[in-house]
Amino acid sequence: MKPSAYTILKSGTIVDGTGAAPFLGDVIISLDRIVSVGEARSGVSAASTNIECEIIDCKGYVIAPGFIDAHSHSDLQVLENCTEKLLQGVTTEVVGNCGFSAYPLPDNPQVLRDFANGIFCGNNSWGWNSASEYLASASRSRVSTVVSLVGHGSLRIKVAGDTSRALTNRELDGMTRLLDEALQQGATGLSSGLMYSPGSGASPEELTALCRVVARRGGVYTTHMRSYSAGLIEAVREQISIAEASGCRLQISHLQAAGEDHWPLQQRALEAIEQAFARGVDVGFDVYPWLAGSTVLTQVLPQAALDGGIAKLLSRLTDSVQRESIRREIRPEARWSGVVITSVANDAASLVGKSVQEIANARGIDPESAVLDILLRQEGDVNIVEHCQSTENLHALLTHPLGIVVTDGVYTKGRSHPRLYGTFPLLLGDIVRKRKWLSLEEGVHKVTGKPSATFHIEGRGRIEKGHVADMTVFDPQTIHTEASYERPDVVPSGIKSVWRNGMVVVNDGLAV
Image (cartoon, rainbow, N blue to C red):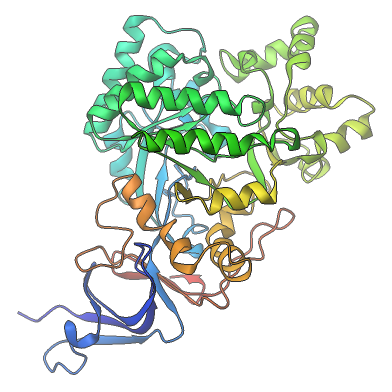
């Protein structure tokens, strides 16, 4: 039998994903596995006469594990083999975040699609009945290894429809059963989106009951909390209490203090998390290295206005009494001048790139009325970027030992947030090399070994013998992104190659 071919990535700076200091050496792979790390002679020698061996010179480059995007909204795009994440070094994505998963389909699939399409950038034909069905489809992705959370909002819609009312005992039992089945079928945990209807209607008791299932199955609970602004401290404490009562692992999604008036709250939130961790709560958080976030415009509304879905919202907006009631309760997390339209269903040229304040001024109306006019005209299909964070707070989050770094990237039909295209090059270029907020090994650890451990991603996230040969090879002196809010869709620079399952999938900045 002819021996398997070997590939030697030679003379690179190995940053192995554990947080350990970099070292010079070789990585030898065979098929889809790493078979040796260190000197070439410790594994297979290039001089071996009977073995096919390719040598790739990596002098001057870092050999790191393939990056793990632990907070992704590419649930559909990984199946469409979109390459935006791959081109920035991502080989594994955790989808199903913020309460949105592409399963389980309810009796009327359109209800789930209406709920999630603003985040998924989807159409009206997707959906899977179970975690096993979705994961089977995702396993065929050519661009990413897909790890899936079960969305709490999707589960709620399956058992009770798009309603934020309190669940009956029978409905909650149905949710716990479906969650248990999904975890047994390969889902890695549960996510909640408590600022989005119907998840906004969930009581702590409902979430605790579900998290007990997560704890029993050894999963992780991630949460888009009820507030990141005035109610930040209360929101953090609620989620810690749920984790303590249920015994589950807690991962707080995109931690931040949004809005200048609320920036001082972040340190108190971090202290609450640190205190919980010190007393034994398994808690962490994720953060993206940008000062602006991205979501759907409907999030600024009182979520009761979305009870029953987008069709019900649009009906309410045509009723003058209900519309005025909704208008009075609108609360953005940023000032209106920092809420910028990035995608709409119609009239894109006249709205995309403009702030709500600019639109309101041009129309001679208040910003809240402008929001409702836009949503009605666009049938609720509007995405935004919110400029709402501080550099000092971002530094504290990125350098905190309990944090991991993610994209939280959302595809849109218009101008997507630049984090979709350049998050990891921004981390390793701007944050690590230029600002020196983190060492190289710390930055790599936060996007490889640490998220791998958090989400139980076996065999990935480290350069180690026996692990899957997922690797990102980059120039630490030139890795960089030019992606911006005005022009986000720019391919990063400084990435030599990306390997997935032992195969080169990006070479010199191009997908192969």
